[in-house]
Length: 434
Image 1 (cartoon, rainbow, N blue to C red):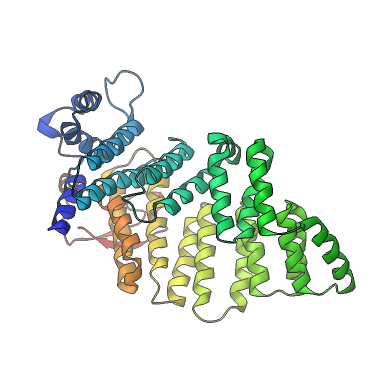
Image 2: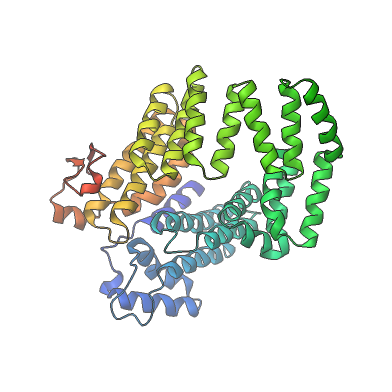
């Protein structure tokens, strides 16, 4: 019975379409009714109009006074679902409404670009959402920390100063609890110039917990290394100590020295990690390619997929797909490469269509779903990730009305290439009308 309730609620969230306007109202009337019901806390009635608004996600509206609140509609729907979760005695229903809120977050990141919305603020809001509902969301604290770290990477100054240092302190303390000194030191080094006295004190205490007397240890090991210039173990300890004291240039130089003395996979990938963290994606690709050349077995697939990710960061989607395909061939039982290709094609739609998405662009999302299906066929362990992405992409595939106007029938094969738009010419794949 509980499972049936979840399925019913999820269906209510995703079944409204951009072509089915409630009660025949105009978009402007729908927006007005939604806003009024929300202000009056008539949330169940507001959902009727809000579902249409987030599914259709218009970015502008004729005759709307002022700037149209496309982003605000998603914020309000999150608030509505979160409020309705608090009214449920059945924990299954409560979790279902919270999951609906989380779907709204996923849709915002899928539909809007960083030029349109403040990604920092949305990561912050999602982190607060996890914390506020931690009693009803599994692993909520760690999920919140991931969001706070994402917002930190977007703007270290803003994140460090936010909440009097509360959020950066949480991130650092979490890494310290895991004895992950490298990440703890990296965050502290990035945050120090913006931190207040309280936060700086916590950083100092954390360093003391993770390593004792680092300056004295550095002095000792530097002398030892002069006597044994090729001792990689000494270099490794010095590298970690440099990170501990925030000497990032010295740490990088030591990482390069380890690589030059012993170009092992570990030493190569360390340089790749640093390049990625600094946004030097081309250097990261170069190091990862070198690591790949000496790796054996299916572990090479992980490196290929990291190369694909770096190409995505460089906005080179065609190369990203090439390396994701290579990863798929190197480990036929791994579903992640298929998920990555799905995300690449989803990104291709955002790049090609921008805010002017048409039914032709939406057809590419069928190909996205094809690759998500292939991911679970390869590896059932990715099912939860695939289901989450399905909830993002399936609602924006062409509606029945849009298929009618294109003369597309369920089961037809159509080609995703330059015949749709020139910017899809590199894709060159077929998909099935759903």
